[in-house]
Length: 230
Length: 219
Image 1 (tube, helix red, strand yellow):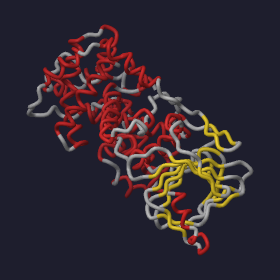
Image 2 (image 1 turned 90 degrees about the horizontal axis):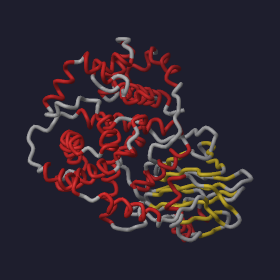
Image 3 (image 1 turned 120 degrees about the vertical axis):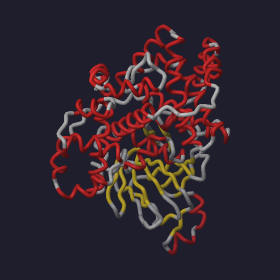
Image 4 (image 1 turned 30 degrees about the horizontal axis):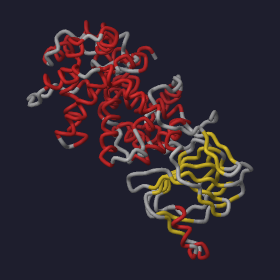
């Protein structure tokens, strides 16, 4: 994780992530990027400091209808000894995966994915490509994508956004070369063919906001492939 | 990084800036001036000081409510968020670390996480992405920012001017004070009565935004 990340989220994406207004799946991809990227970590802290300052500097609301005294008393009345162990217990129950295993591969994953990785669905394999879904709630599909060495993902466009974060290994497409930590956002206008031309497998985290649409004649016939990716 | 939050500057700014203590007085919190919330949190953590907590509550709860109404567009959820956030502040005050940021920044991050988890819980599935997955608790290694200096040069260049005007007002104001009026970060902090750390943060954000506007990439 030591090399310099080259492809970053835009500042506005980073702001929405920090505010907590992004869709959860997209926020997760940004969070995983931050695990690789000290530059964006710093920006996140800067944005938090900025918003924190705005919060503190708001003028006091002119009129108040809320019963603050009641709320204050409720907070102070909560028995701490009762609450604290319960909080610790619920988080201790969770399982975490520090690595992703697929076939003979065992690949380390960043902190932000370790809890959810333990809840991933089974791997589905097609040629040199394997995919495993992660639980998602909004209409965005979140999955791991493992591209074996010397494997090409069929040419495709997207109806929505496709956001990909490289977690390990390398891949290339028409636009450039990507390594661990690099974030790639493809809009519906992009047609691209990601390839892994290295000797190592490439693990990615991917969010799709709409089904993929395959363009090449042969792969277009392979309709199940669309379901496979989505 | 110790002064990220203006920890070293608060007292000077109180003395030199009559205006800021006036504002604080209007907020009916005469015993605690702006910038002392970090100390208040430490007292709350160590002594479980209820009257100190009540002061902090009186200052932040109404502001969080206003903040929450903007975020939720709904009074009831905003109040639920305020209560949950302020409960966390009371119970977890010991986790606050002033070397990592201001009290208000810490309180904002709690509110954000509470809100996020509130919205998730509505869908009520345990597998959901949680705030803990998304926002690491500030334990990233510290980075020393050296990129600012090389960008100072670019600021003189004319091509930056149109983008400069597109900066968010708060960032633009700080940039004008530093680069046009040539004030020190400390002086800007005192003039605008904002923490020194916030001055530095706004400069870094503005520089990054300008860089993004100019070459479309960030590194």
